[in-house]
View 1 (cartoon, rainbow, N blue to C red):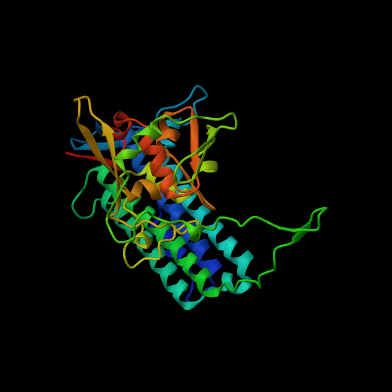
View 2 (cartoon, helix red, strand yellow):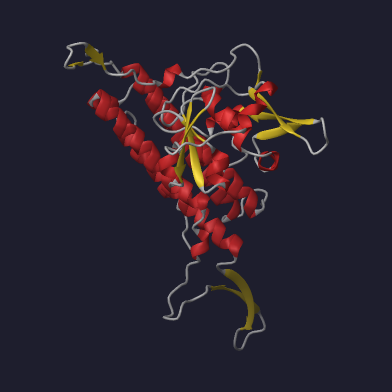
Length: 382
């Protein structure tokens, strides 16, 4: 069983005044310690090993001694057996956290230069705070559970506390790096689009690209954005040979199922995998509306929802649903656009849209009320 050393945790924080890259390396060490602790807790919870007490009598003495023995399952060769089932999504998420943060640091260093890897005072303070917070929760859990200090808690509660801290640390560390990128990045001078001359010598310019900042919501002032009921005729969608659907809100592509990591942003996958995880601070009123991982600007804020109607089994009645902003955020793709979570989870093909309204339009037309009921971020209004 992996045992976390408190001295290892305390040594993870470097001397005062390190560069940002050194701090990120220290954060990776803290994530590694958290992963070791998680594995130890899971082994104890899953019964990977157990402690028994054996009472034996010492020769020529009346005292009885309680001997503690660890019983671990062995494989056919007599080696300690590891339960592969313990390598679950949460443990993978902890290991990916260090990779994700490092990837953000490398991206900023490539774009900005070595000064980004050195970092500024604000980023140093934020990353150091996250290292200390993650170390502290790891030490507290270790001391409470394995050292039996303080009030003993159930293993599940320890795991929940640890995973909550890991997710918050990962999110805030990436957010700190992203904010530093915005402070340091100086965009290069714009180069005019190339002009291509055809045979008639009339200039043809490259078509404009869709930028993340051009995403628009149906309403900026109201909290509920209604999809008009009169558009029920849209239920008769014709799929062309090119597998493209042209909706009233923009193009929607139907593609065969692909790996989630190629379809969604890593932060979107994190929201999908952890149903109770709230949106990042960036999506609240004081935030900048940018994904803490890929920096995509998403024109949606916490508390906002889109209202759609579906026919009821009762004639003349309709069922009303609210599609929460969290559904939109967890559907976004790194680099722009959205992919339908419902299709990804329950259909043979994935659906990719250019903007939020196209996504909502697709969910309204191509999915059923029964599918809505299984989605935590779509709620029926009774």
